[in-house]
Image 1 (cartoon, one colour):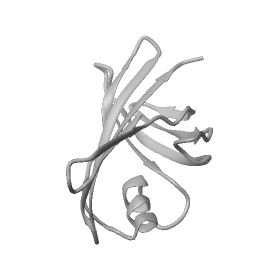
Image 2 (image 1 turned 180 degrees about the vertical axis):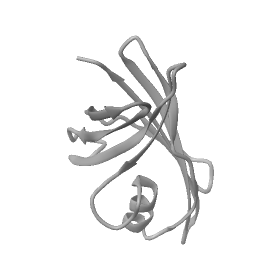
Image 3 (image 1 turned 135 degrees about the vertical axis):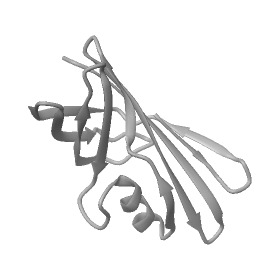
Image 4 (image 1 turned 90 degrees about the vertical axis):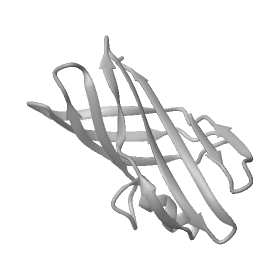
Amino acid sequence: MGTITGPFGQRSTYTCPGSVDILTQADTTCSGGFTEAGSTDCQQESGTIAGAVQPDGGVTFTADLPGGGSDIWQDGAERLGCTLVSSTPFRGTLSGGTLSAEGNGVYDCWFGTVNVDIQVSATRT
């Protein structure tokens, strides 16, 4: 789920169904991919993830789509024609087979500042 907050405080929320696949895990590092299935809110896309899992279940990872930027935040800047001001990696927890994490990107666009918050939730199948 994501929330976009525009320069005048207007907010829109969107949901993108998909999946996360952890393909490799060595010690505390992991990597894999994600797929957005496509919906009325989102287009169908696939990308990669890379991160770390801490012994206490804390998770930090980055996500990236093909093309332009080094992560989804920079990819978003290129797609929107905006400048990425700041971003965070995704941070959260892995507990009982459920991944919950969130990340944030802030953009300077020709029409003002745009704040994008993305929350990821995935359950092991």
